[in-house]
Length: 104
Image (cartoon, rainbow, N blue to C red; front, side):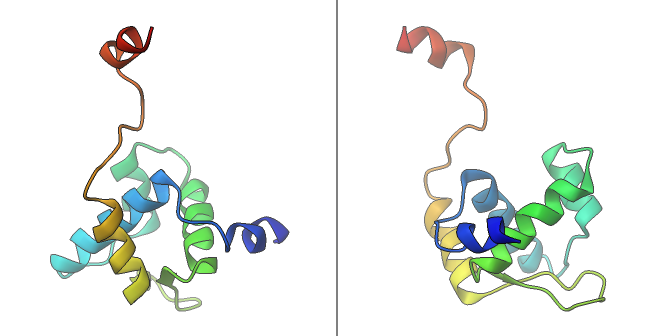
């Protein structure tokens, strides 16, 4: 619990911004993804990974959740703005071979 409280003051991580962007696109399509769908979209096997990121996003005030309600994940206005602002210049999740050789 203390971890999420400490994370509440930090800006969203790259993965969290990508989750926000995914949620924004889903909202535009008129749907709300489940945790399993989010895990599959990001190539994660564990739904707990999604749960942890969503808990951090909720602590930061970027998403809201209704307790004990399926598919209740919603972006706040701040979360929507963060998804748009941070998504203008996406960074790669993993360094490519070309970027590694250029850095050397």
